[in-house]
Length: 279
Length: 281
Image (cartoon, rainbow over all chains, first blue to last red):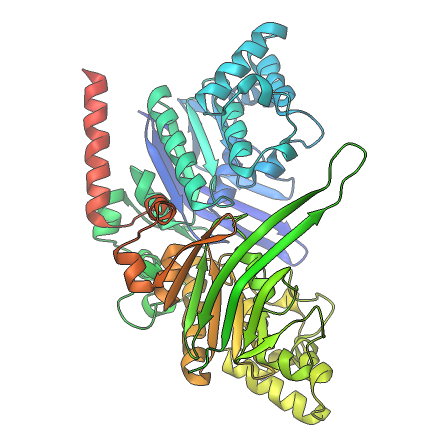
């Protein structure tokens, strides 16, 4: 049975010039201990659909779906209180800018212990001990010392490790990572991806990885959803997607990778794909 | 042939002043780098954040004066600390920055963005400035009607085209590009890289191209310099460096770069399957 099921999700934003459809009838499902990559360029709605699951969209957004359920529980009809028991505990999320995701005014130790206090009811020494364990799990050296550091005293890669430690603090069953390595250098990117994959296997979590980078997809995903302008273009297991992409848009994305350049020119999306697919 | 740009033992030190709690210290951002680029070629400078690659780019673009070493443009030594570069020198070297959202003034119309270098550095009359700007807009794949628009009306890729157009207004021979495509989507990145390749062919431009993305470097570079902690650890032709990376740091960069090769994916999927079955038993 799948862990998260979304059918026909539509998200509209009310803007000054009328309604704007950011996500247009998307179906997504993730199984337990599966890695799903959602790929798309800016404006494809890849983040918005996951923010809808988390309930993090602003008031101007209207979310409709035929189904949005987590582990058999209906997320659409659930009360705010019930939802709060899931979000941040069973389903957690990390974001693109690790330094901006942390509060600059508090030590990282305070921020992870806050999560342990509120979500797991740990206090004092128990919270501190668990925070140290979590920092060890995500590979932060000298965890006791680092708990006393402020975000600006750490590098981007280390801040992302702190974010991951906070996200796995409650042993979630589903982790949503929104462009977790986009702001990082390649060598750090590799470390963070390796860490996410290791944690995913150790904890048996479902992992949704939102990215625009086909390289990241190739290195991590089991299954891939390709989105463009709020609509799903293709869904396939990772090998089929790279071996025999079905949609013109996927072919265009793969061809635009500079390492696939064969001649003098890089193919661009318009070479493969006519703008505005028929609605 | 004289190289368009040459650096001899370029050094850049930043002095961080002390305070009551902290001792003053000197950060050695660039520690003696040599390079040269021939006309019409592209030198890619590759490194991670903090490696000093942007510091070096700013020196080449005549924005910052180096603390040591010598910079030669067209064989002429240039020392901007001793003498401000004149219009002639400014026309030879231009720069394109990483973030097209930050490098354009939101309150300046595109026409003014493009004509400003001419106003400052030349005495071309207004009508001709306008004509040249419109022609340049077409050259970079935009339209003359965009002349009176503001930067916010353009997408990221279009803004980067505008930044490239601005850099080309003075007919430079050398363009310093600091991560010009890393803020762009993949398909837009391909378009901008194509544009840069076309312009290089057409105008005989020389590029110093700073990047952290090896796949982009592989596409655009002739020569590659890998820098780490302010030192050039490896310098070779593109084919040589990609076929046979010698330095440990270069190899580390290559290993960290994600591969989209089918066989690699097949191997990974198989490994994962095996690990799962192992876990289930």
